[in-house]
Length: 52
Image (cartoon, rainbow, N blue to C red; front, side):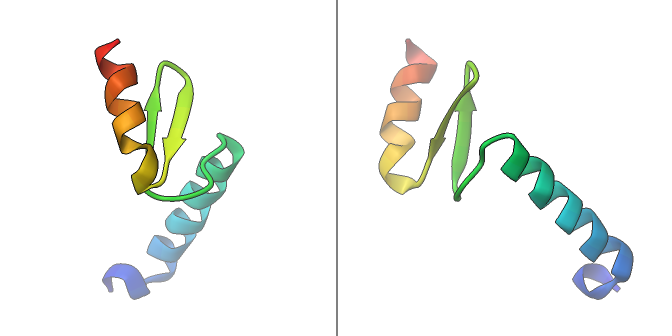
Protein backbone atom coordinates (compact mmCIF):
# COMPACT_ATOMS: atom_id res chain seq x y z
CA UNK A 1 0.00 0.00 0.00
CA UNK A 2 1.93 3.05 1.22
CA UNK A 3 2.28 5.87 -1.29
CA UNK A 4 0.56 3.79 -3.96
CA UNK A 5 -2.73 3.51 -2.07
CA UNK A 6 -5.66 5.59 -3.25
CA UNK A 7 -6.26 6.95 0.28
CA UNK A 8 -2.65 8.11 0.60
CA UNK A 9 -2.76 9.82 -2.78
CA UNK A 10 -6.01 11.59 -1.84
CA UNK A 11 -4.50 12.80 1.46
CA UNK A 12 -1.40 14.04 -0.37
CA UNK A 13 -3.52 15.94 -2.90
CA UNK A 14 -5.58 17.51 -0.10
CA UNK A 15 -2.48 18.50 1.88
CA UNK A 16 -0.89 20.00 -1.23
CA UNK A 17 -4.03 22.02 -2.01
CA UNK A 18 -4.20 23.24 1.60
CA UNK A 19 -0.55 24.28 1.54
CA UNK A 20 -1.05 26.17 -1.73
CA UNK A 21 -4.09 27.98 -0.31
CA UNK A 22 -1.93 29.05 2.64
CA UNK A 23 0.69 30.54 0.33
CA UNK A 24 3.24 27.74 0.12
CA UNK A 25 4.92 27.90 -3.28
CA UNK A 26 8.00 25.76 -2.81
CA UNK A 27 10.06 23.60 -0.51
CA UNK A 28 11.39 23.90 2.01
CA UNK A 29 8.87 26.34 3.49
CA UNK A 30 9.14 27.69 7.03
CA UNK A 31 6.39 29.78 8.65
CA UNK A 32 7.43 32.29 11.33
CA UNK A 33 4.79 34.52 12.86
CA UNK A 34 2.58 34.31 9.81
CA UNK A 35 5.40 35.04 7.36
CA UNK A 36 6.45 32.33 4.92
CA UNK A 37 10.05 31.74 3.95
CA UNK A 38 10.57 29.29 1.11
CA UNK A 39 13.61 27.94 -0.64
CA UNK A 40 17.08 27.11 0.63
CA UNK A 41 18.19 30.69 0.06
CA UNK A 42 15.63 31.97 2.61
CA UNK A 43 16.48 29.64 5.51
CA UNK A 44 18.90 32.15 7.07
CA UNK A 45 16.20 34.81 6.98
CA UNK A 46 13.79 32.39 8.66
CA UNK A 47 16.39 31.71 11.37
CA UNK A 48 16.79 35.45 11.98
CA UNK A 49 13.01 35.86 12.20
CA UNK A 50 12.86 33.00 14.72
CA UNK A 51 15.50 34.61 16.93
CA UNK A 52 14.08 38.08 16.57
